Figure (cartoon, rainbow, N blue to C red):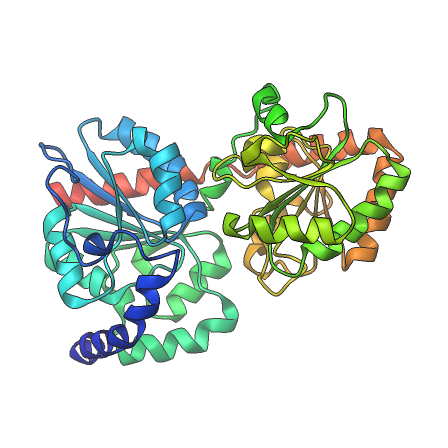
Length: 424
């Protein structure tokens, strides 16, 4: 069965490689993706080696609260952070590089690439996130003597059948994972149903909640406010992590709201910044004046596109109210807890399938789910007419995020035990 997966992975890669080499998300770091690293990229020296892997920028941020705690527990550890996407690598180098010893691209899940990567990094502990179950990588790590753990573990209920078929076809890789740190009890039960050892599964929560440290005393970022062209005192609606097909509806809602709230400003932060020019064109097509954060919005246009990486959390501090995208499409939602942690009321659409745990945290506590654009308009219109309600909802949202923290500490304790077993 393992040989079948090895052969199938190479065959699939032959067909997929041209697309992967051209896609913006995956075209950089080609040699590293084959497990080849230039001299000086990976850290040397003694101490345990910990390899943390998250697929994208958001996943790496969810891992970040554990890094400081791992450093405190193992001061001489060498920490390597890997990702699959170019945006993930860029964000990690900008925001997390000081916390780790190296940021690299993860290898393709090919027999040779994974073994070269494991040999070069030489991890004592490999930590994967969410559903990053890569059979060749897991087996290469185990063959080298490393321990393997899954953190923030999740297995979608509607994909269980696919997981079973895949795992049956490749000789279940879950049997090679030493520790499953699951987000919630239902996720733990799914891991067990898929073949994880009962002794290896525990529920610790989601570290992404810890990444959203409430910043009740944080000052607004006046430099960012100026770059966005936002006047002091203006009411600001931020539409964060929007996707194709959502901006048109949001702009229509804004055109109605600005009649009632003339000083209202709209900041649109597309999930993928390479869509910035497209969003700017939509603003102009709607008959509105638009600007870009990257150019400093020199005309102080009332609608501005946040076309930068890593600034959305800071921008949320400037908001009066927030709508989070990916929820008016079938994308399954985006991170609604980030603005909540900044003490802002958060609205989102009906499609939050990938963030059900976050919805459970915020519903009735600063989060409002709306079924469509018309409902969004009515709710926002009502909220802007009652400023006191906006402040109260924001305070509730911040408190809700505080109350679900602590997963990082629990995870690090469990990982430390696993690492000490490996080195004893």
